Length: 145
Image 1 (cartoon, one colour):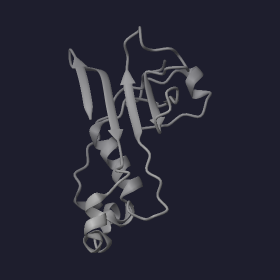
Image 2 (cartoon, one colour):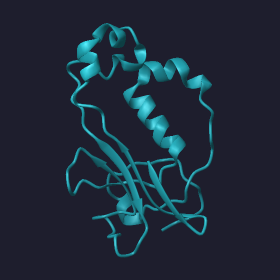
Image 3 (cartoon, one colour):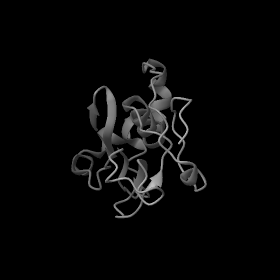
Image 4 (spheres, helix red, strand yellow):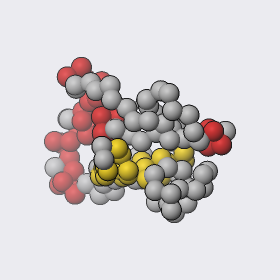
């Protein structure tokens, strides 16, 4: 996770999840992992690991409406995969997304112990980008682009 702020406003972030394609420790000690629900879902043989990344950058020289949205999701390592996202993603929402979707069994067991945070960033998605399939994340209400 990387966040950059200027004058108390978010300027950029890069939030990446890179699942390990090789679990050497699992290969050496599989019983430890097979008995632990935290790892059970990520070591199944039918799982194909691929990275995902939520990016945000509001600099005018970077943003191109629809083609390079301020906030976007990249799946895999495809150079031009930029799925619009409604707003920058907070650390709380990013970690929750990863835990809920990739470590669901453990998440359901322990989620009551995770502190909750209501903070969200302002919307960054444009009306043209909302005409496309896009990802809706929690965001502050009131700003329309």
